[in-house]
Structures are given as structure tokens and as C-alpha cells.
Amino acid sequence: MPVKDVYSWSTEAGVFLVSGGWDCCVKFFRVNGNEVFQIGESNVFKPIHFMSGAYPLLVTAHSERFIHVWNLFKVQ
Image (cartoon, rainbow, N blue to C red):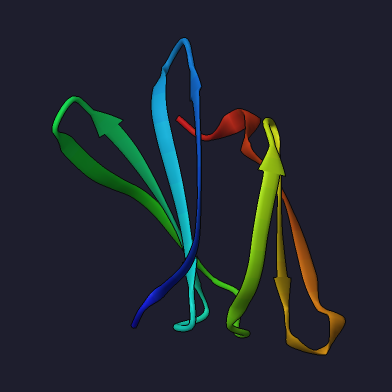
């Protein structure tokens, strides 16, 4: 399924990426140079329509006014 939105951030632990798409999944990745490793995935049961963040918080918005607020501080 296509990806709707992407959010990235970097810390001392590395560079990270989150993708959200029409498949109702939020996927977490770690970027090491030219390699990308998936480190997690969460099914939120509703397609992601919008995603925005300011580290350490990420918000995903879904249909029917459903939202998720993610704390990215522990993602490593």
C-alpha cells in the first residue's frame, strides 16, 4: 500500500524514520548510512490521513476524528 506521510528525526542514538499509510500501519525504521532497518510496526486499524511531529511527539490523524499521539523518546 502507498505511504501517505513520513516523519524523521535524529538523536545521539541515530537517525530514525516513521511512515504511515493507507494500510493502517505506522512503521518505524532506523537509518544507518545507506541501509534502512525496520525496528517496529503498529496497526492502528484506520488509514493515516495526516502525520506531523516535533520530537519527541508525533501525531497521526485518522478518519472519524481518531488521533494517536506517539512518544518517540524511547524509540531506538
